Image (cartoon, rainbow, N blue to C red; front, side, top):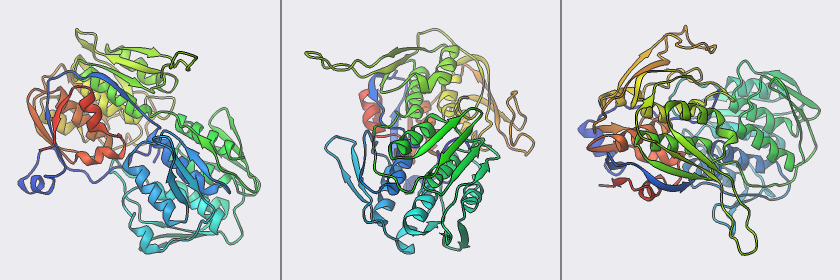
Length: 474
């Protein structure tokens, strides 16, 4: 899981067979395209941070409180796993507030945990906290979305460096720490987000000092560090991707409002551009989206940042955000490469590519994070797009798999007139891209497997309605 934890369900091709239509009858959205999206929506806490913050609550010896938690499937999975391990999770007084009481952490049975097997890859992050609290941990077989191999070797190697023993069995992984966990020096071969989170969640209570080199430094990682620091951890973020953690004997609970979801914000921005619309995304923050905003403007989109204004006497204040819109005229072709932060986020490219189908000229996308992330373009081509994918590295960013026969570069020729089609969602981010394409296309599309979008986009159907989209369940 190098640059993101956007995990995927098994891939399906575009279109649909009769059997597939029957199987997904209750999981389909009818989209009447051709209407610009207009209006205002709000994003809550980042999907790629909230679930990790929930796991961090296991480490505290007092309750934690997390605000702005989106109602998405990943949150439900982690909430269930925490409950199985004795953490009492309750809804707070504020909408989107969760309270975690870890006073009675306990072991969960293999059968209970296996209920969640395959539903998420987040259980691997329970290892460190459970080893600290219980001395052992069981992690079920890990599922996730198919965007390319994301081995957990980085995680297991790091845990072994801390002193954990790992036993692989057919049902999953059994871990123990007979001599406790101890600080270590560890260098990641790639700045993996998931492995960096694993090290942080394990090192904060390991005896001694841990030095992690080539760490991921995404905004969600920094926000997790802020949470752990609130709990009593001592963490230094040095230059050149080096993080130093001084282990402490105990941690307490936290109160935290997470950073907003920059992936969802960019997805709605791309939707505004592709449909020639105007969408205000409340909660979106400029600082975490600077790379995206540069590309968005280069393509020809316009945006305006609205700073938050705190409430004063007689003034209710104002929540900040970013307005995104298509200014009219033609869009510009661009060349971009995905990369780890502060580069162009891999989760941003799929929604934006839909907009690039409407740009004049040849756009080039070089995907350097996940080797199998361009499969969704087949569905866009079925709708009239002109996208060619290549095994060559069409860019200058060093790429880990350019010589391994993966089609990981794309050339998008535009503008293309998109027409309606029957689509089957292959994964979370590509799924939202398919939805954007259906909204931008002429005619009525049927999008199957849309419930997968609920993994990362809270109330997306209600938000579509707020933006004037013509969608319906059959």
